[in-house]
Length: 75
Image 1 (cartoon, rainbow, N blue to C red):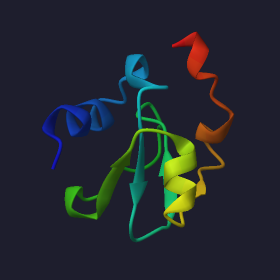
Image 2: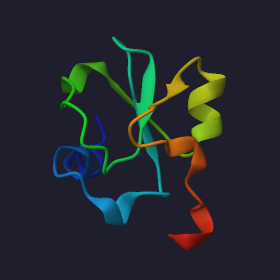
Image 3: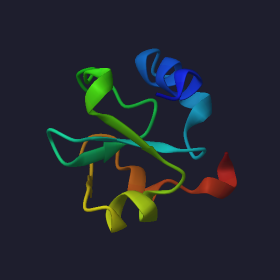
Image 4: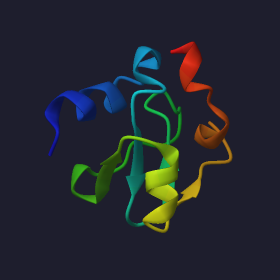
């Protein structure tokens, strides 16, 4: 487990948006670190550098935080 990234997820750290996304095995969804969705169990989380990597692994974008529409150039 990537402890630093996990800490950013559980604190909904918006400054981490655009640096990585996290996916939840049980839902098949990936999110931004700042997503206000329910906190997943750490054992169900996978981290990806880009939304494209998460999609290639079979996850779909969260409809709440829309991580696939984030402009990494703004970060």
